[in-house]
Length: 207
Length: 207
Ligand SMILES: [Ca+2]
Image 1 (tube, rainbow over the protein chains, first blue to last red):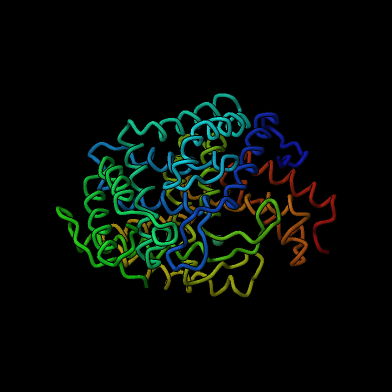
Image 2: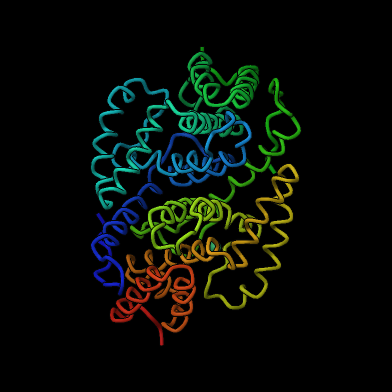
């Protein structure tokens, strides 16, 4: 862990600010966690930090496709923090059934460590947001999940099938993700379904 | 420019969605725009997309240091889009006086092109947010600027002086940035000042 500079700012609760800085410096590591999918231009693998930025902006642009009454500010907040646990737990490829089984446990241990760096009430609040995202029960979490699932589909379509081709993913496996998208947004679900039909015509799926 | 997949989603305004997808695919390029400063661990240069994510999260964590009444959701929104113009205009190093003179013009041309990819009213709204950030007149824009200026200071301090040492930056030049931070947040301004005093003791500044 990176220790904040040993300096005192006048008029500021030093212990509190130091805890916040410790968290901010720690999450910088998310920039080094690589996902499977490539950037849209195919030049390299995407990292979790830039991915989170792209999702947050995408959620704003697609706000009108969320169910009426969805709080987009909270969707953005969920997306900003949703992958932080991967600093310790690593990125779990959505089509890796073996890794997915141990994922929840590994991610909880990571959340215990990383959110505890913050002042207690602040860490608890961010951790609750992460649990909300994971549970996918609120419209905000479902819409955030929809955007999160759509994003690698776009990247794959634009990189000649990307990870679908590379890892031999079947259309059936991808259709499970389309269902998750449709649960968060009818419009984005409809678009994802059309995109997958097109990808199928192009021969991007295994089996 | 990357063209969205030629597919039609049922029940969705195709032209509108295609314009939004064009924008979302275009801004993926921000992941390839490199800044001068390194990651906190010193391993490589930071890109604009992951930088924007880190700032948005930092603004949330430091929300209590914004003036009372500051709308942190809008601060986050400003930070998510603040560097998009750099896709065309490139990153302008804050201590490069020559590049800074042509920066505003280059960035306006970029904003004209990139925000126009979106449906008109949506593009106009995001562009207005960018202008708000640039003008630094609202508490939200000032707090966003404060976080944006503090971030490379943290990275520099944690990488043995980073770009301050590499480009021979003077303490006087850095103190101008500390003033910008103090305009957005008294507490963060106070912390930045203490950090710079410490960096000075460590001999990180030129002159
Ligand atoms: Ca910049």
